[in-house]
Image (cartoon, helix red, strand yellow):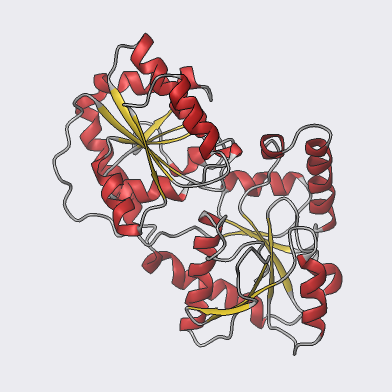
Length: 363
């Protein structure tokens, strides 16, 4: 597995969590698995994580040269997985082994979240060019929208493998009424593309324009934390916003269970794992009409999709929930029931079957 980050990287997120699960599943089936990733400050060059051999060397733009040299000194692999995050590893170019490409989302506008022009324009241009060069490579993704974008870029062979979650859906939902103040929560890396500032601004609009009392808990860490804290102070929301940082899985599940709604305001997602995790706890999501999020949240079935991707649009959608009080309990149950189908117990066997099939096919 070629992936920029490994589970212990401070910037690891949902992509690394699902990657870890797939590889752990292969280890449990008796396979030898290696994960090559970028080095980070204070990391070990080699480490075993749940039976997975993790190697770290180089950075975002140099790791592929490090792994190319290392790979040339190894015995052939049955399968090499080139995981794309805007920039791939170019494995089909330098690797004689069988290669498949794994992608969560085509970044597209996400480039604009991290880089200003002209870097953003160059990033989008190279991404399109790279995908065209990968046209004959077998791709794997979880998102229907990503599959459509890949097809538009000329990718000929794409398999959809769903994501899974470790969170087990609650057997019985505790009572939770839509009383004020509404308890809202976000769970994500605090990165520019996640647009957590939109959720904070929407909270201000709720208070001032909709006269609705609500509080927001922010779970996660990242480069935007300082700016987000300044925004909270600037909007005078110190008493209504709480930064919880990185939580243990048990703490996160407890926080999700207590919330009325999870908010997700990302520019684009491969799927939205935290939506399904919240659903497993009987908590519906209110999300932006963004690719990926409209697949993980079924509008007025397991949650709500805002009419537009703006703080005002999000606030308007949140303000309407009181009129859906009868439906809210139905959403909770439907969300919980659907989330149960995405537990790894259901997803992992078929995913590992597919990876083994690719590994066994003549190169």
